[in-house]
Amino acid sequence: QIFFNLSQIYLRLGDREKGMKALRKSEILRQFDRDLGADKAYHDKGVVAIGSATTHHNTALNLALKGKYEIAIIEYQKALAINPQLKDAHSGLGIIYTWKKDLEQAIKHFELAIKLDTKDPLSHARLGMAFLKKNDLLNAFEHLNYAAKLDTALHEAFFGLGMIAARRDSFPKAIFYFEKASELNPGSIEPLINLGVATYRAGDLNEAKNIYERAIKLDPENTAIHRYLGDVYLQLGETEKSSAHMKSSSKPPTN
Image (cartoon, rainbow, N blue to C red; front, side):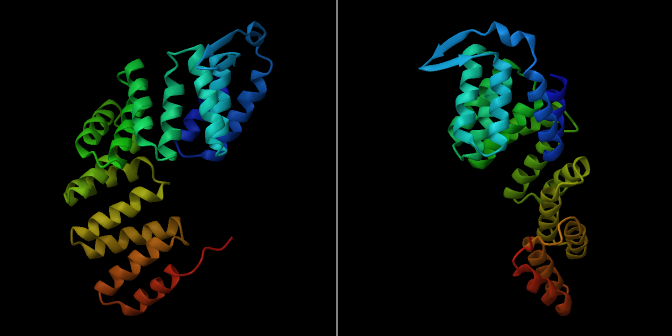
């Protein structure tokens, strides 16, 4: 359980490699869990769930991280057949359905997770992002704003709020939220790129250039950032640098 909890922290921090390593360790140790000898079978719409709910949840998470979504969904359903109160299984299903672009199902499961824990900031943030993908900005703001109040270090919530502000052409607010998200998660490129775009749209070309330069150091082969840099350098009259970045924006990434 400790290694499983550790894996969740690493995955939330965006460190997939350490998250997977901790999850594998959890799975190895689970094999020696003395509770596994007391298995029971449950039936839910033809699905037979044998073992503990946590076992099926861990298996589902492992499968989801490997991109095996359909099998992972079945494992999460088995976990819920054993323990309908398992909030993390609903969250896991919500994440998979978000990846599959089935936003109605994603919203359904995130809402069920919130019913089981009304003050879980991560569930509210995930639900808010699902509403954002549907372009339902009112509901998206409600849940993302609440998540940010519950957990002032939750970078996902601030990033989502920045996206909402940008879509509403409220660039000073977008800059504030993207700066906060980038500060909380400095290794992530996405908040930084969007900060650059919002700053550019706000009319501060020099600051946008500086932000893009910071971003390109994090991801030197990111063609979108090169394109943004090419554009901003062109606007600033630095045609040579603009041409160099535009050329880099059309290069295929190296393996």
